[in-house]
Length: 125
Length: 432
Image 1 (cartoon, rainbow over the protein chains, first blue to last red):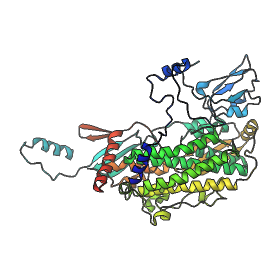
Image 2 (cartoon, helix red, strand yellow; image 1 turned 30 degrees about the horizontal axis):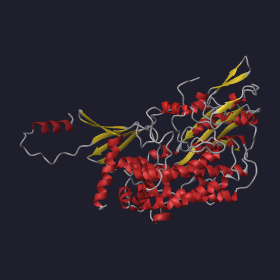
Image 3 (cartoon, rainbow over the protein chains, first blue to last red; image 1 turned 60 degrees about the vertical axis):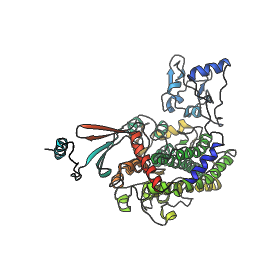
Image 4 (cartoon, rainbow over the protein chains, first blue to last red; image 1 turned 90 degrees about the vertical axis):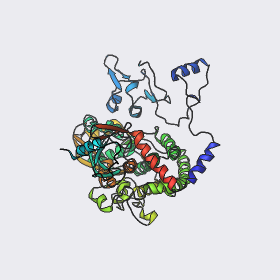
């Protein structure tokens, strides 16, 4: 265990590898803490930067949509619902698996991957 | 009448000052582990007959978690199934989706572009590095070296970052597509991959000295959970479990897929490193660590040799789906996942969804070898032996020791504590 003991001793003088997100010390309530951050009362410990091409929350532009139903056809999680009257689709974020296959398939680029990933919420919308 | 009960009754009738009879008739107890256990990939129930600490009989029950994934698959089109296949196993997700792709490409006679073959190889090898290092951490945890576990998982983080940058996600990468891959590696990303490989070359030396030269780990793993070459062949062990028993079996070598036919991949056995094959837990550690090294070399070779060109057979997904709707026949995909050989069987009958889809994951083959491995071992060695075939993780765990009417529950912590205690005892004995 000498090798490991050496490593551990070195680590004593190094910065911890884990990025403490959202705060250095766990807050009593994460939601409460995030609210405080919004109000400007607390400072958020920045998350690890996201690389280019990250597949986050999908942004849907209803104006651009032509109702071709291709996204419905390729979606593995049934996250799209076709609205007969409007001839558009509805995107259900809670069902989405973020494979971004719909982004690839959309002929008019109405669907785009964003970098947003903090998606847990009490509100189902 | 049960002879055990007679002995109990006699014990109770013993007077307080009478000395305890030392010579008791040997009797075995049954110890059941599972169906949910942290060292087990799928929920599975072990029924061990133990004599004291020694395991004398091994039995287990399979199929505790039927998710019906294949059934769901027969109601979806092949593009949707790719993402479903990824979710069969979180750690080998590239393998399952690639394997499904190969099976469908087989039926449809789709030719995959050369560059896509190389990209598939790179992704598969990155996944192997990730899986084997993750396993090394789990093995350390089972032995009671939690600091080693955190250290190995810290090293593993780098490959996850690379995978995230290349595919857009850390675990379920969603990179495979029938007839190629979805994303290319661009000029900017190549230096990042190379840097990560350099990092692993450096880290590998450290892992090697931590795992392979440490006397405590050695004495816990050498000679434990032996799977002989004969048993390995008879019970159809696959992957590192088979290779650690000296069976030169590797789909990458035997039946090359993707770009492996251009690369010189040889099945690694402990003979290359230790000079002899024992088939114990230590050998399995050796094989996995050597495979990490092999993977690094394969990726480097791929980056060097990779030709330019298309990465997809058909870029327009609706056109691809229309093509796949008309195909008929059945195809098999075989490939070497980090844990062993994966087989996907797909039958298409000219409809949108496949008529049948069957998946054979490597853990299925590596379960039966648990029989000879666990035989004659101590209960404290059960976690590390079970983990040494790299089954997936479930979370809760309960083992019940039933002794007549009294019941003692050996939960996850208690089980691990036994293992840790054994390590500590060894440390003391070795004077460390």
